[in-house]
Length: 445
Ligand SMILES: *[C@@H]1O[C@H](CO)[C@@H](O)[C@H](O)[C@H]1NC(C)=O
Ligand SMILES: *[C@@H]1O[C@H](CO)[C@@H](O)[C@H](O)[C@H]1NC(C)=O
Image: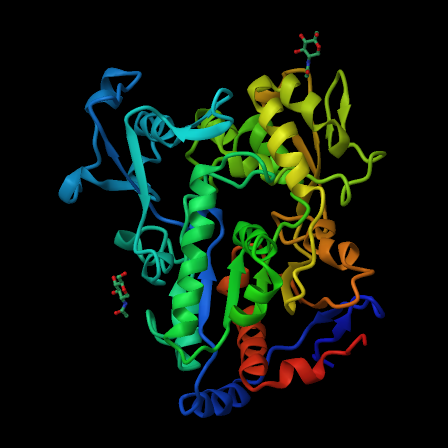
C-alpha cells in the first residue's frame, strides 16, 4: 500500500488514495544523495492569495472617503511603495474599505481589458526569487506562513533560491483571456515567466525545468505551456506538478461573488470586500465549468430560482453584478472551453475528504445574507470533480502522461504545508530527478 499509481490516461483511469506517509528515514537517505547531484531547476508558481502585492498612490488617486484619501499604511518604502496584499493591519473596518477600494479592478469595455483603480500602481515583489512566496506578510511570519514549508523541503533536497529554485509571483487579481482579447497584465506575466524558465534552464546547463504550481497558479501554467510551441515545451519543461489546481472552477467562487468571502478572518465582514472580489478577473476564471458541474445539478438555490454551471451569466445578473456578464461570456468562457493537453508529463497532487461547498441555499433575505451550505468531497475549497478534471479531459489523449496523487484529509492550503503532502511532493521531485519518471510511466505507443 501507499504507492501511487501512474496512469496513462488513454488506457487506465485509476486514482489511488494515498494513505501512508513516507518513513522519515527513507527521506533523509534520499536527501543526502541529492546534494551531490545536479538537480532539474524548479520554478514555483503560487496560488491567488499567496502573491504579495505592493502599491503606491499617484496624484490621480481620490479616496472615496476622507479617511481613504489620507490613510497610508505606516510602513512606506522608497518611492512611496507600501504593502497592499497581504497586510493584516488593514483587515479591520474602516481601513478594510480603503484596502478594498485600492484592490478593485475595472473592466473597460472600450479597451476590452482590465485596469487598476485610477491612481493606484501595483507591483509584485522579487520576481524570480522564492523569497516573496514564503509568507503572506513577512512582518508576521508565524501566522502567515505560505510556501515556507514547501521551500524548506526543497532546500533539504539541495535546492537553492535564485540558483536552482525560482519563484514566479503575479498579480493574482488579473487573469488571462481567450486568444484574441487583450490582456495586458496576464500576458506580461506569461512573458516574464517564460523568460525566467529559459534563464533557469540556461544557468543550469540546459536542464529543463520542473514547474510546481499551487491552486490558480496551475491554470496559468497550463496556459503558458499551451501558448508556446511543442518544441519550446520539450526543450524547457521537464515536468509540471500542479498542487490543488481548480481545473474546473469551484462552487466556493459562486459564494464569493454572491455574498463575499471573509478571507478566512472571522472579524472581516464579507460584504465589505464583495465588490472588490467581484471585480477580480481571475475570480471569473474560477467559476464552475460546465464539464465538471452538470446542468441538472443546481449549485445555487434561492426562493426564486436555481442556478447550475450553465446559468452563470444569469447568476451574475441576479446577484447584482451585470458588469461581469460581458467579460465572462467573451473572455472567460472560450478560455475554459478546452483544457488542452500540453504533452509534458503532469502530476496533480490533491487533497480529498475535506468538506467542500457543493451547493448554496439562500433564504428570503437574498444574497446579502450568508447561505446555508451543503458540502461534498474536495479539499475544502475546490470540489473533487474540479480537482480531477484533467483525468476526464485527457481521457483520449494518446501522448499525455498524467498522474494523480490524492492525499486524504489535506485541505487546499495545507497541501503546501502538511508533512504528508510535502512527503508526496518531495517523493515526486526525487523520482523526476532520479530519471525514474519516464520509465515508470506506461507508454501508449
Ligand atoms: C534571490 O534574489 C532576490 C532578489 O530578486 C533576493 O531578494 C533574495 O534574497 C535572493 N535569495 C538568496 C537566497 O540570496
Ligand atoms: C426574488 O424576486 C423578487 C421579485 O423579483 C425580488 O424582490 C427578491 O429580491 C428575489 N429574492 C431573491 C432571494 O433572489
